[in-house]
Length: 241
Image (cartoon, rainbow, N blue to C red; front, top):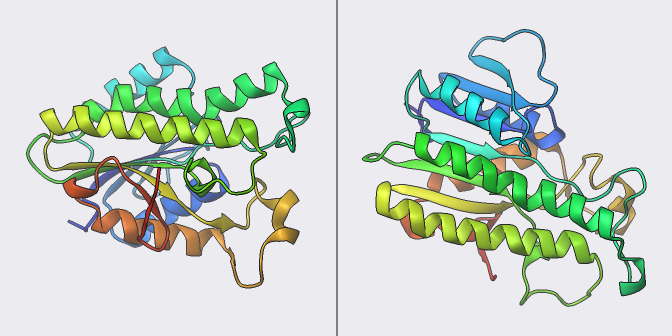
């Protein structure tokens, strides 16, 4: 069994970072990886079992949890979903840019969806051995670290997500005291999400998807119950709420 256990599930598995995490988990010897997304590949591949899951659909998540739970507990769950921009949606520079529909969509994907995944998949973590659930957050979701303002919906959705993680960690500790529920900041990764803003990234600070996956799994693999509820950067350092 690896540091991350033998069974893992990744949500957003067809995304840039999610796909890299699936590959890296396989490379590290995880024996069964459930790669879940709204558009899963038609066939499984090796240790990777693909499946459908819509993080905003309770019934979809319940069905996925029931299906996976038949095979036993999960040692690692990673929620690698998120939205910063989309057609007709860009980060707000000022209050005048806020649009209700865009705000609601960003909140749904970045906060409500991961909360629903936790609702259905934290019960699949084992009670009496180490386990981990991680969700991708962002440093810009830190209230105390906000120095520049702007990006209202994205910042607020990630701050709310961090609070969900904290509350879920407290609740989970009562049932599974060896589990760690954490939010991970991947840094700026070369993905479609960051592409419109990469020109502002200082030299040497833009990482590849695989580098990001390796760093995130290193951090997650070393996380324990005392880290539960924390926001942790790709460098292993805690980020203030």
